[in-house]
Image (cartoon, rainbow, N blue to C red; front, side):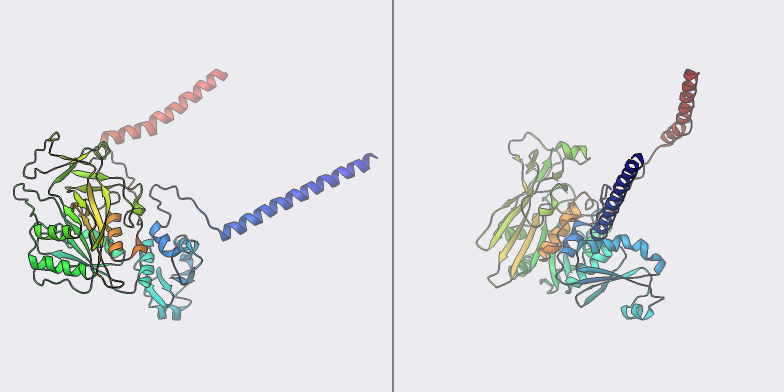
Length: 458
């Protein structure tokens, strides 16, 4: 009887054990299948260093044709490249990644024109583009060139004291030129004084902070360009009259913009926002944290931008134009019309109280089918200069404006961020203190605690 009961218990335990093993195996198999089909990861870094940017996700998810990324390298180096390339494949089922060893398949490498190991080629449909670098910017740039097969030139007006794209100093525009290159735009200078006509190959015309007046032929050239379907970005600083750094009123261009529905006020915005003070910004930098609804700024929720030496705008639509405000200064800002003195009276009753419009975007109805002029106006130019373009979302705002003007709305997003510099700078005294605490005081504290515990137990 006992033997029968014991046998029954052993059978039950064996059945339970078998069932548990089968359940565990099933869970492991299902988990592996799901992991292979749905590759999910969590990036805990502050600037999402190990994640593809929203811009890349938007481009890849918007693919209407199958795409192939072919990576050429030695077989032993395939694994380090998979982290980046698998990220593209996980974004869309239309993306496939192939790995080719040029030593084993030299014919494929020769056909693709591969000269160096670690090179990626992106093919979308029948178009192929080689990535300029094996980085997210390089590979996404190849996608953009495949999708945007026409040359896109951003023309910066020069000749009247504007910021220069070849100037690497604080006031230059060399950084924005670099950023445009990453979005596959070509930046070049045009002089409307020499020839009062905007070149036909200009995708976007940029008037970047002129300090001297434009002559009427130049203004007419800009007017004809936009009203015939051209795209233009205008950045005009307040007409300050301080010493040698005087800025012209540029009434001719102001009159043109006013005819399109944007009035450039002759004032200077001062921002007393305490948040700006905490971040080290002076009162002459207007801090913007909230935006209106527009494709240029819809993706910038929660991203701050700053505008040094800015002026206010008045915005309204006209019979030919549809104009929208992009953003205002903060409610703690005000504008003064005294532009000839560095001393400003905060309590002057003539000051205009904020919030005040700083930027606007508009469309011009040309009357022609599928032809629309576009323009963006900002009451500051220094925000895009080398000294300030890296402030929070300034670079994103500049590129989003270019994308919208060039009808590249699919590129509007937040770009990949540079790696954070996490270095800690200490004085010699601070370094000696950290060294003393870590090498002597902490170990000594552990020893003393151990002796105390031993003594108590004894």
